[in-house]
Image (cartoon, rainbow, N blue to C red; front, side, top):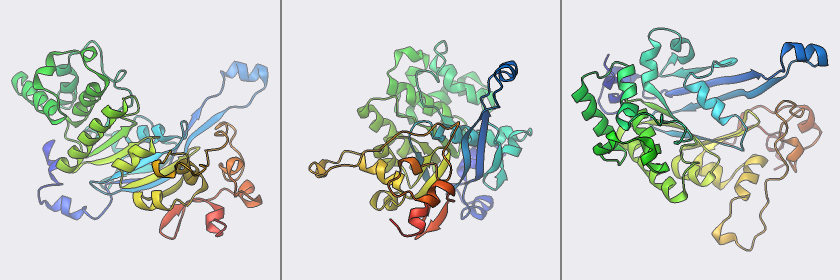
Length: 351
């Protein structure tokens, strides 16, 4: 099967694509990742300290339909970027699994056939200044996936293909002879997008792709990504802490707190009627032009130390609705009135 075929399933009628059209393209089931952040063994023995484990992601489950965008939001350190790296195979999960188009992706990544799967899953990194090799020309940067996956080897065809990819993200084919330092931040991120598109992927994991850019440039990059999604039928996992950006790009939104999903709903439902107290606090903190006279509720307190999370619901020290049950029993993500939410107060009808 050629590298073009998987992508063409979105636009050309084919039996395999038709068979899986109704099933989610991406299925994460109870994904968890724990890091051992203990001091060296000798230090632990001398100081008589136990091992320290950081549960960066602790049981995250979601689905993404083909051609749609799921956005993950939350404060820094809540585990969003760890989820991204789990989905592209940069991290091995401690628990749980990731299914892609009906295949166990993490098992497939370890086999020779895993290279074919990696062509269909690509990632756009957060910092366009750090993710591009400053010693390589743009031609080499964008062509690297084509050579690595043996998609194209002829020099002239490779040059033409790089020119097409640069044009698809609003750059000139003539830019391929330049170095990254000759571009602005927004242009560098476009080069990163072109590189990610080189293997004609179906699923793009976008780890805060606009957070390092100016607001005006953010809009340009986001519009390019939306246009590419419509033209190519791409599926996105979009990670951000900017709720205005999330509202612009997403179909579904998942809110994360201390490694767990606390609310998962479609975009309109979540922004119009948030259920979880943490989601409400995040939305109340956004300045609104028409509510200049209304007092806003800031996000109170700080995220607890992830090495020593609180008992029960992790949000209970900051939650105005917390009771004894919240401090003792950890809520599970369950469907309540069409929204998946992990909150005892919502479950009991207290809010």
